[in-house]
Length: 71
Image 1 (cartoon, helix red, strand yellow):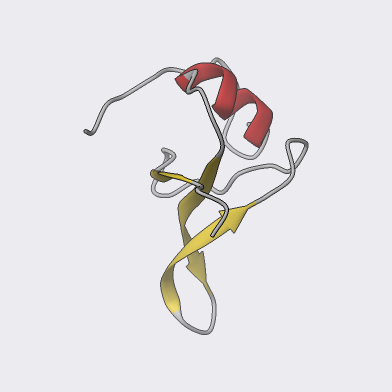
Image 2 (spheres, one colour; image 1 turned 135 degrees about the vertical axis):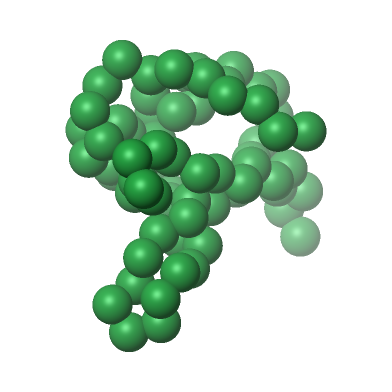
């Protein structure tokens, strides 16, 4: 289900930890973000570490959050 949240930081400063706190989901998840790759164009970039900045897309963050069943 799509939804929108506001994170009071500039693009490029928002970390995965900030994003996780804003969406408040229980359990283990995988986080993919819409990004621009110079070679391939538009891609989904997976971010793993809480301290990593997440990519922005056209002034916003576009994300896919998937449950991680450990498979």
